[in-house]
Length: 158
Image (tube, rainbow, N blue to C red):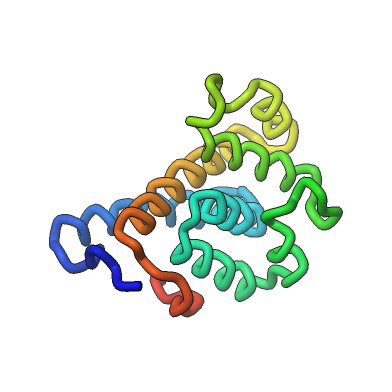
């Protein structure tokens, strides 16, 4: 599969991608949201959106950070898995509802929000919401332009 557009080839796209990456790095590096939760959230949104490039990247980055193959393999079926904490399950539910906004007339339910708020403080909730929004933007850029998965190397982008 050939990409429709080189996302770093034009100065305008390269600049916009840099800003998205910078915003993501602030949330990843400066928040107290657990790294494992961050990785699970980015992987699950990428799976839902059918983004091969981001699914590849976040699977490999999570494995590189010490995530187990069992947990990575079960992210897509997290509701039926016993390997995720209640906090991670709340984050995954928020991720799914925040990613599938168009599928539910009300968007994210009050129950999903309240459940996440039981496990994460305000700063962590902000980071979680920001990560969900930014990974969805990245997924859409990659899916629209057909960025292929498979060749990513952990840490490739810094």
